[in-house]
Length: 465
Image 1: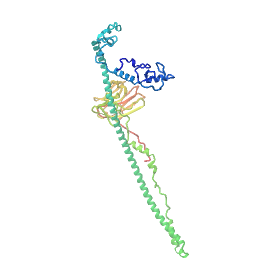
Image 2: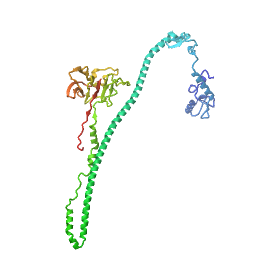
Image 3: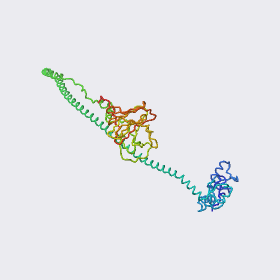
Image 4: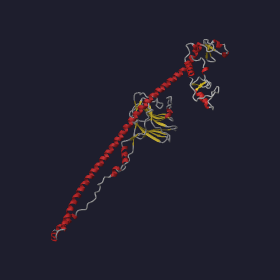
């Protein structure tokens, strides 16, 4: 049975319950780590109490004392019997009162003691009710905060899934684009190699015919030379009899033209290899377009949908998207790149859309609470058959404009100008000036399909081709 008091089970060095107690020769016990630490500070291994020198460096464990300490710690850790917590620990009386000054339950004896002199008391049930109500009152905002954290975690979970979806979709689109580029390059390679082989075949055939013709001439000349040499070796009479025929035969061969080098027989390597990558790139530019503004899918409203190339916005059914502080609460979308210097322009095809809004906006025009500051918008809007310009300086102006199919937005950050025009007729629609104090982004809003038009890259003339 463990001692009711822990005093007999306390190490005299650390003044705590023994941990791995060891027994010295002098019969005193200490924690193993305590006596080791004590000896490191002394020149001899002496007892911390009686100073007797212990012979061994590793004193034996005191198993009996160790078992008592473990039993005591286990007993102390056991919960108190039911109902014992309702009794005063000092007077063993029922706890019937609550001291408001000390904020603790007390018994009637405690109430009359000096410790609680002139203190305020409440019946235990009233105090418990008051404190329960206080806790419940403070618990409500905590519960609300818990809901916020749970919602935030749910949104993070949804965002994590959305990130995976975005990565998969983007990877798929990247592969499709590179597949088209690979196919184009493969077709160009095959076409050029085919042309090279055709050229090789034609020139090889030409050289074959030339070689055959030269071979025939060589054979004929060789025969003439051999025959003439035989005539020269003949007897005088025979030689003289055949002299005229030999001279005639030699003269016939001498009138032949000398062989000439064949012009254009070799392959024009420069034609096939010269500026090869430049020529392929130049040809590729005729197939590639450049869009000056790319839409940012992280800002698009759930009622809108973007095309895969991020250049077209259209209305769609509401889609579930994770909460995102960058996403607009208006049915609109921002460009992916903002501007704070230089000049920039982009053409937008609006077609037959009956409700749209185009222009630029400071990204802070939507606050974190979802409220909008129209003074940070610089747009032209079409609604209910009217074209309206919204600018901080002009607020709103109805524009005398006929039906438009396209609009060009021109932004000059350095001069602080935003202008709108009809690119088909090069007619100016509206221009406003404003001092931009922060980066502005292209903004697009439409209930029907609106598209940012691409710009064709200039193609450099290629004389080699």
